[in-house]
Image (cartoon, rainbow, N blue to C red; front, side, top):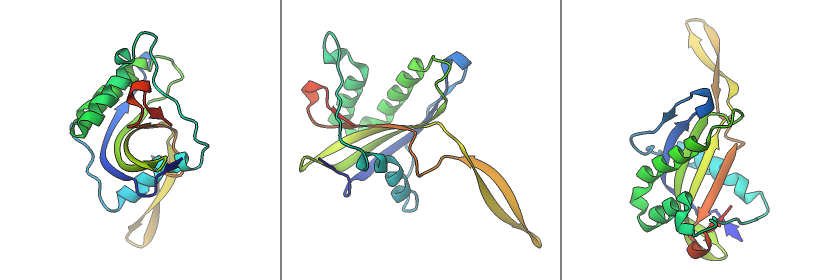
Length: 181
């Protein structure tokens, strides 16, 4: 059973990945995103809420020859071995995703790679790597005062109430391919 109440975000890297078949680019941020007290609780809820509401059905990495040949398993192992390397490793994850984005129906979007601490899994504290992608942009209204009127401005952004895609890789069962939600 998973408990995410005391889970903390230790690192957040944000990149953008396009679709190769549509000649869209990849954008890799030079540095991790600097979290603040306003954004941290919002983004934590955005990332973790879907995992609290679903039945826990765990997956794991597999490879027909050996797990050492599974690129994401190797990247996860590098991160869990040295959590300070997560930003550089997040670039590898995003590049791997970009290389796989050749189908015309795959949408471009922002990729978030997160290092979580204090995930309680089966009453044991562990760390986790979150890989998330937001693809859908929603219209919303902003208002701005201009002299004696209130202007309405239409902008686009992501809906913090619904995560598009995501996975949590738990630092447990490494030899079996980790526990993944």
